[in-house]
Length: 387
Image: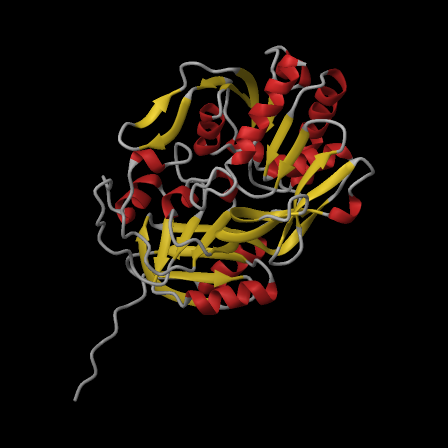
């Protein structure tokens, strides 16, 4: 009996060590090079692909059901996808959700992002855990023609994220106001009409849902580019300053962000709150150091312990660098710690309302255990205003 001919692969993922994974391509055609990471979240693939913190990375989704709820304009975390590509176990299923306005594969093609399906994501994830986040080349050709040697060379030629300042690539071009609040049934996104606190948000790659959480906590938010100076920040006479999430090496972004933060702290006694890259920027400004992680934390199920209350929160994370808790100076307290690997997840100054966390309390995607941090930020500003 004749064997049935197997369909020719239309995409391949090539690691810098020469390993090749063949599969079915969807989305845009062409090729891209990036660092490969994996994300364990069971929901939120659209939010993940549009999270600016994923600049320079191809994302492997460990959950197999990708594409099943389609995509819609409301769930974008920024204007366009920022992650370089997508790797999934199964080809995307047909969208089946009342909010869907488009199929994932069409959305990726229209937005210029390459994806590959039919990959053994468990094997790939084990390789990332054991060897660290590799440099890869991802290619999609409907004809299935691939120059593997050239793709290996391209993967090996990728500079990597260490030393790379990507915040400048994803930040806003000019300042703007934000008043949209968190999504709620049945009205969707409402507008903040009675803000109580003026907040300047530094955009190192800010997610929209973080800005919505600030607005929902009563903040009148003005967003400034990552390169804004202390003079530009203070010109808005803020009640508080927010430092956003973002991609790349914190030490590289810190070359211009750290002096700004230090000057703001020296000139104004106001609350400062940072998330993810903003957490790392604050730590650097206070005198600590950051380190590159083996494979980072990417998912919506990371347990974090509040060292001051003993409470454990299930959090959403996306970072490949971490603050080295051993380098925290006197007067800076470690407040949160990962229960997966013991890495630092939060700090605060002992005598001032200045604090930050490594994880994403805006829960997009992810659990909502940590929204209280936005309320704490608002309470800190209210306390300063009435003092």
